[in-house]
Length: 469
Image 1 (cartoon, rainbow, N blue to C red):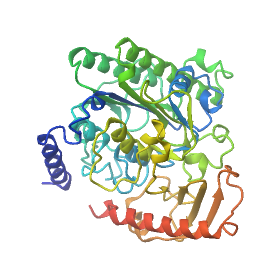
Image 2 (image 1 turned 120 degrees about the vertical axis):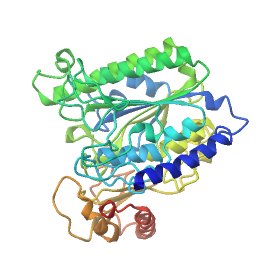
Image 3 (image 1 turned 45 degrees about the vertical axis):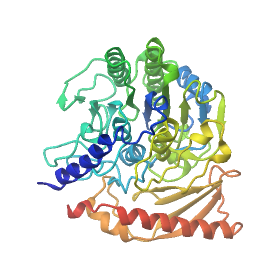
């Protein structure tokens, strides 16, 4: 029996025990809350200043409507500055290194994947009686010729329609989708619309045949990650047909249209008030003109690489027109969903906090038990931490090869490595991180440095060394 199977059996025993106890995580007196649906909308490489409600140049009336009808976070963060680890953080409420994912995954060349021992949001909700589906980009590991890896159904999804990484050869007419383990071949259309088609079809079928069973669906779009493509009529709203910036904007415009179709379906099914909808991006944009006045871009732990849109929408439960300034992020999604649905959280260390008090007019009750923390081995700075208005960053104190693709042989060096050149920034006055205020706020600096090292030590203690597997 391989290690994956052994872990899976152990983890399945835990989930089965929870189910035997009766909807595992559910409180006995909160059945109504636990019947509400959950839709997680995730963009890929969308910048902090791309969409309309974040003062971006793209016309996004449907995304804007979610913000207008709910809560929009001004300081919302990805789980990492690149794809795979951010998604692992979203799915588990834990730092991605705890969950086995150090950087973006290349399945043919790496053993790494989202660990089976992790309890995902899909498993939490499935154990509470939910139907579950993942639709769109996955990038948390799929089986390849070289490595046997778990598939989304082993992480709690009843139905999945996914790509291992990007839509190929581009967003237009992709040929690399897999449905429940079977390749579907070339499809006609644009990725975001195809993802919306699948989600709409799955939701309709589920609601029509299982009216009393709530559902959870991940809708993870590929746009605007390169290689990009968008319909000409959407591109030319923003520039010439061959202009990369215009095409980039066109992909977001097209995705907003796909989201509009999803929202209309939810309305037609009569379930809008019973559906929590969350919208965010997996990391910042690779375009420096789409991160606003923030420093850096995708791939680095400056604000431009990790700050993203974050919207929570639930008519009747979350008041409309809310603008929340408290720092928050994808790491908070799992505990927040549990809080809003009144479900017990998994009994593991969660790096994220329950944002529900901020969303339901109980802001005084909100407590962040641990500052937001990022680590990405090829980034400079390699680590960052947000606590209140302050951001602390540092560089690694060891050498690292320049390969873009993560090498699992680096893991021992990462686990044992330390940090130097710490810098402190007051984001309330300096969102562009231009001025190091470590000397001005020496007490804050020393306290945050100590806390960063403590969090780092905890994460590295849990970290898997794939090189030894």
